[in-house]
Every structure is written in structure tokens, then in C-alpha cells.
Image (cartoon, rainbow, N blue to C red):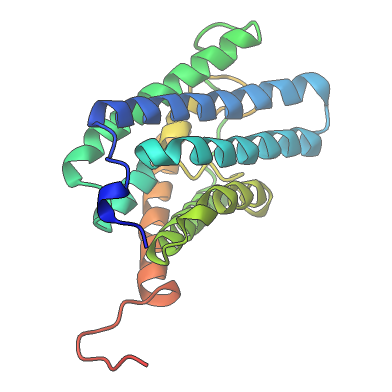
Length: 236
């Protein structure tokens, strides 16, 4: 049995924020950079999406493995908010954490653009606001939040890196929106007029759909996947 005094002390807030910025930057750069690379090596949209999905899922798995011991590797404002509502992230840390993530995603977009010879910022012109796509974002984000909260509630955090990576890879193909499932990466994608981009006028509807999805995911965990016993309910 592990003694509480042997557990590593939580990293200082500034270190955790730096980890969230770094992880979000790498994730944003991976999503956008792999999308640009995909269009350079194939004209087949299916192949392009496959490249983008595999790169994103693999990066998520590695980033969570490396950064989870430091900051929890939230890398997603919707996940941060859900964890805070669930009592696992202090409410006072929501704003600085989300700001750190947004900075990271913006920097990741700029780096990806520059790596492939484009301007540092090129505002996307890709419209993505169809009702079916917005529903896809609700579904994608609900599933992601449910996976994370369910595993945390069951003390199965060791499975989160693989589960999140596999879920996002699958959701790229299973949802009409190709599973952004992340308000931070949505903002970052707006800064690149490339395969993974999203036009500014589509950004707010996508983020609204993601927040609705996060709320749905939390309800699914609390009511169905890992229901909390009511007071006075006999336990077997």
C-alpha cells in the first residue's frame, strides 16, 4: 500500500500551466500540420482524413502519457470545465488553464503554418456550421468527456491515454464534424486556411455545440455509466 507521504507533490500552478500550453501547442500543431501534409501527399479526401486522424490520435496518446503526471494533460477547455464541475479541478484554476490552452493552440497553429511555408496566420475560409455537423460536435464531445470522467471515477486513469487516442481517431470517421470536440483546438484551427481549418463564422456555433456535448457527457456518466448512489440506497 502506498503511503500518502510517498506520493509526488503536485506541480506548482505555473508549471502546470506551462505543461498545458506546451501540450496544447503540440496537439494544435499536429492537427493542423498533419492536415497540411495530408493534402501535399494525397488528393484523396479519405486518405487525407485518415492521415489527420491517425496523427491526432497518436499525438493525444503520447501527450497524455507524458504530461498527465504534471498537469493532468487536460488540453481541452471543455474537459477542464467538466473536471471542475465534477470537483476534480479547482474553480479558480479554470480561467488560467483555459488561457494557457488557448495560447498553446494558437502558437501550434502558427508553427504548423510556418513549417509548411505558409504565412504565420491565415484565417480559414472553411465553413462547417451545418446542423448535422453541429450535432456531430455534440456527440463527439459528449463521448470524449464521458470516457474521461468514467475512467477517472473508476480510478482507471492509466487507460485514459489509450482510450482518448482511440476514441478521437474513431470519432474522426464516426461523426459528421470529424470530431473537433475541443473549443481550444477550434480556435486554433481558425488560424490556418488549410485542411483542418474552420472559418470564424463557424467557430462560435461549434464551440456552443461542444459545451452542450460536455454537459451531456457529464450527465451520461452521472446517471448511466457510473451512477452515484442516492442517500439511503442499500449497497450490495
